[in-house]
Length: 472
Image 1: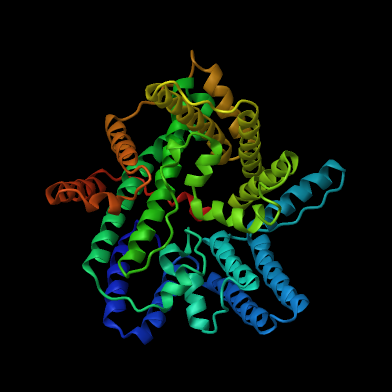
Image 2 (image 1 turned 135 degrees about the vertical axis):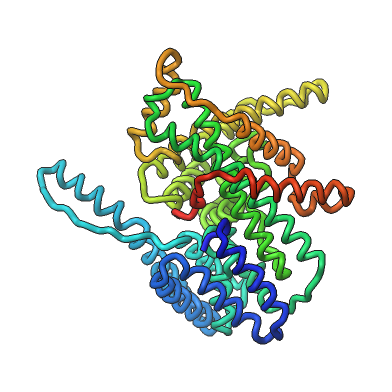
């Protein structure tokens, strides 16, 4: 089931109503059943894969706690859990990629051997894999008590608002809340509805309308002039942001309706002044996951520069691979890691000096923000391109097609949609839509709500684009 569907608009109110009508002891049962329905709306049989990982990690958590006084055995259970979970991820997300590339390699050696694998990736597999891994790691470290109730643990992994595309929740946040008794409060309903309305607007009005333009250019970049290609690059930066930010915001709102607070996943990332800051603001739950479970165990920043650079590159290459089984994703992760290293090297060599006036400081910050946005936009081409040939065509057409190719016009209303989103993003700097509305006059708040609802109903794209991060 997808958020931007009639089914979900029927499903969510029913779930919220049942949640508050049922006694506390039955709420987890209803939420788990609802989450199963939500997930099985896509490919029902794939819930069995989820069940296998849940059983393995639930058992590993209890066994690690039971044998806490036997470190080697405890570590063995951790390894079994992680290897089993990653094996499932490898088979369903990377087996097609590996067999295709092995066939090509053998062909180069004159050996004609082809394996045919057509495995469909279960929706959200990378997300709930990392969520379950965070649980077993936290139990192993002694930061989290093992959950002894199979139903509550299953609900932690399958909680429907963030099941498919995150945010990736830690047990210390979500699992704890699932045990708490939630009361019906107007504030939760109000904040939840605000977030849902805003999320629908930025997904269905901004992201989907931009997506139609982006898809046309990426399908045949050499057919369009350089201006259209560069505009498609910039539009994709906002499309993927609004698409993923929209999903995360609807997820936040859906959980908030029932009193659950899940993690913010974005904080105005395109106002970042460096690649490092961008990753502190973009897909925060994934960035912090890699920080806590890969970067810090490797030594973090408390090492010499060369080792630190290695640690950073490992994190970003893994991040690229996590996003998909394609060389373009690996290249995208490598590029981000390399730029991160270059930026730090330059800061070490040329430390920033205090500007002579605040206006000079503002100007320098604006230049840094523009620089980071341009670089991130160029890197998104690697992410969006279907393959290296498509990526090459985009870059070549962007710089060599000024005098030729078709000009793909932009509908005037698209500038309005994008402009409204950029304005809202600036106003929400280091804040969140529901919080920003709190201290605004009631007439202004309701005018904004009405405008967002009206535009979502009237101005949504005629094409319904799937959420981009569903493929991960």
